[in-house]
Image 1 (cartoon, rainbow, N blue to C red):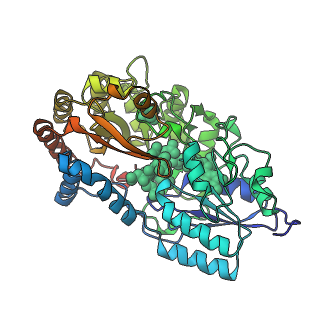
Image 2: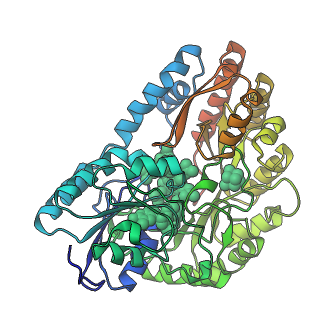
Image 3: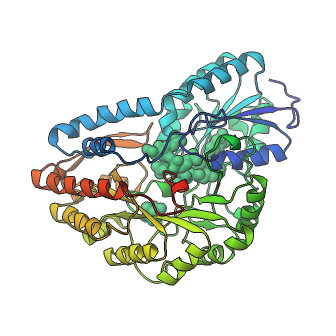
Amino acid sequence: MNDTLNSSSSSVLLVDLNNFARYPTLAIGYLVAPLRQAGFKVEVLSPLAQGAPAMTHEVAETKWEHIKRRVYFSTHPLMQSLHEPLRAFYAKRSFKPHQPTLSLLSERLQTNPPDIILLSAYLEHYPTVQWIGEQAALFNIPVLLGGPAFTHAETIKKWSQLKGISAVFAGEADFVVADLVQHLCTGKPAQEWKGEGLSTLSNVNTVARPLTQLEQLPLPDFNDFPWEYYPHRIVPVMAGRGCSWNICTFCSDVITANGRTFRSRPLMAILQELKTQALQYQAKDFIFLDLKLNSDLVIWRGLIEHFQTVVPGGRWIATVHVDGKGEHGLDRAMLTQAKAAGLTRISFGLESGSQRVLKRMGKGTTVERNAQFIQDAHAAGLSVRCSMMLGYPGETLEDIEATRDFLAAHHAQLDRVRPARFKAIPGTRFERLYTHRPQRFKGVEVQQWDYRLARANYHNTATSPLAYRRVKAQVLALIHQINSKPLRDGARQFDGLM
Ligand code: B12
Ligand code: SF4
């Protein structure tokens, strides 16, 4: 490694492993911008940037999808023991390395090696990261790894041990990435870097504190993405990081690098970003990736008030949380204004139709408020999508019956429902509650916490009885019916995006 390298002569190859979205990866935009500003020669290698077809997050509903869902959500005692091998099989297939990207990387290392490789990965990308680390080691090229899920000491430790991975950065790197890359490019040992959050094989450090001063964030740079290949030009944006509720027991979003603690950006900066990005990428459609866009009501109202001024004719989609008490900015009048401001689709975490389950989850909402929100959002002309959870620990026959009745009652107003099986994730409030008092979760037995993939293998015998399974089948049938409906006008371009 050349000790005299400076940022203007160092080449950085940023590898983004995401090909699950039909729009650029926000993290990449936030890393490229400061690196370019610092004078590095940055190149992005990503399946998406290589024109790989993006996988669809939510595929069109068919009979086959329904059957797959029946298998995935089966809680038959036999299936409970098959879930883990089936999951591993699915993960292997879905997250298998994208060969064209790897071939390009391989060729690049042989012909024109970069000074450093930066990898942004989800934990599902383990085999690809392993492969890239091994290849880079052959050419003696440092590899810096980061991603949203590197926030648990045990996870960081496991990934720091990978061959060829020089260091794992845990936290939001927006303000430090240029300095860190400069440090590593000059060949200095990673552990001598003065900042927070950097771990190596021999020294696992804590996670960098959540960023403050978000007003200083640069404009994400998406120039390396192949806009011409996208069926619709959609720009991702985050108005703030984290979630103001921050309490749900199962939630792993609020323990990610960017999700820890709620921080808002100034309204003017967000509006300026919308205006500039729309012009820069000739796009009018935006996806807000905020965990809860109504976390800060000043921002939420400000966006509704000014969106059309900064992006005339533009449209946007967002996720919100229906707070159980007080003002949440989601009354019918506000939603009607939001629709007029271009909001096309709204997503929220319904989770359950049972008040008891919502309470156990710490969801901070009520069944009545959820119901009112769905009615109001639909009446305002919005496409309403919700995520929900089946098999939350402690969910009983009566609870799942309440969920079935809720879905049946709102069948006409819901455009899409995305169900998930409860996942036990290390670092969440659930892990702490379970470890402290497992008997609180009757029928649930966590067999193994897997820190490398930040998940757990568990059984939930409470969901095995035939009566429960029958009602669950009814819930899945309702979901199939809802998801088979045509989408409301205008929402089609946004289908499957979140
Ligand atoms: C938007 C989103 C999506 C979108 C778009 C994905 C995309 N890549 O653009 C869609 C809907 C397509 C999606 C799909 C999936 N997602 Co998703 N998604 C998110 C969400 C809500 C926001 C991500 C985001 O843009 N964050 C904003 C940026 C700025 O933050 P960041 O990514 O953390 O990046 C910062 C730091 O991590 C760090 N950093 C990141 N990379 C690097 C690299 C280096 C070298 C350095 C130094 C630093 C660094 O600096 C960045 C800037 O501050 C997160 C939740 C969350 N809070 O992160 C989940 C999340 C990332 N998704 C997750 C998952 C599991 C998935 C799916 C697998 C779900 C599924 N089963 O279908 C798929 C597959 C995605 C794939 N293969 O790429 C998990 C990942 C956890 C993990 N295991 O690693 C998360 C954390 C949700 C969760 N709590 O479980 N997702
Ligand atoms: S409201 Fe959503 S993002 Fe916030 S803690 Fe609950 S599940 Fe997580």
